Length: 395
Image 1 (cartoon, rainbow, N blue to C red):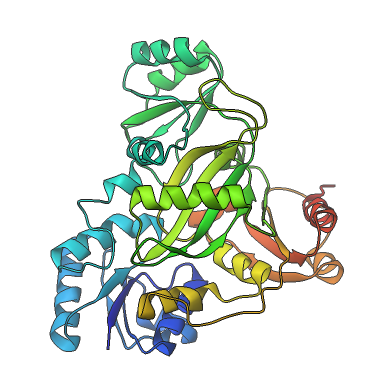
Image 2: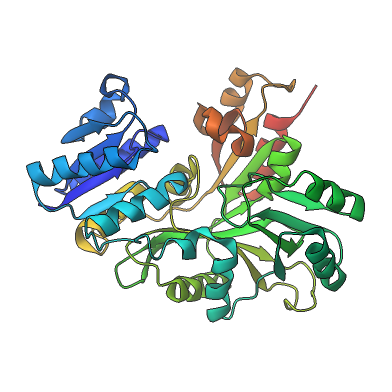
């Protein structure tokens, strides 16, 4: 029997499904987190063989003790995963220290955390990326802007989500940024690409072959976070052949294996010098974990499948063992802010649309994903647009 250690399996709350499907595939599931056992959901408790509570998730010594205990009691640990961006570095460190070869180790993790390092792999796949420079001084920033012009985007080279990401449109804003330079550097500066983000999401096996693929259309999260605006995004009803080809080339270049992936691209609306013609995909970032929040559930609703089960099949068998009917829908997410006054009540939304999820968003995710979300399954773009307009209409 394989032993799987799941880090922080209680967050987001739907992640208990990963543990449940592992157990159904005959895998021994062991959990580590700082949440008291009695506060875990009954669904999660039922699929964990054992749970080890640590007092501080940032105290690595506690994880050494937890892993040592599990190894002594259950034998060789085969997998360690959190499927969570925040803990990817922790996952990798544990793998290296305990000689677990089924995922990224700490020598490789920089390739998936550093935005400047990501560009090297996209270039290897011959996928264009926005021009960039690592900037630590105002002078270096001005030299870069002389080449690309305003506006530009500046953000931490290593960071989660859109935290401390800034759009700078003039020299006054540039000077202000460096006068108040945050301490979570180094910072990367890029030319701004306008437009929605097209994602390539899925699961690959130990050979880097894509087993499952999906795609979403999302707004720039930087604008959502900085403007505290409403959020909406949706699943593509199908993955285009061009996006699939570009995404698979990137997966091979990154040497991704045995995991989820979430790649972000801009699709050029018009020809842009140095990047290509209209319609070409330009790489933004690469994330080697599931798309954030409840997006895995949206993939399920849109594609009439169980992404949790398909991931567990990859873990247990390195291939898919389950098949699904393949019915396709658009799945659309719209979320509200608590400080806004909306026209339609929760009951009205639930009565008028096929809402498949309605949840409060955890505080740690709310800056990027809103405070209360409504997710609906619809058959066409007209219904999709109607739903978003109805949910987000203000008085």
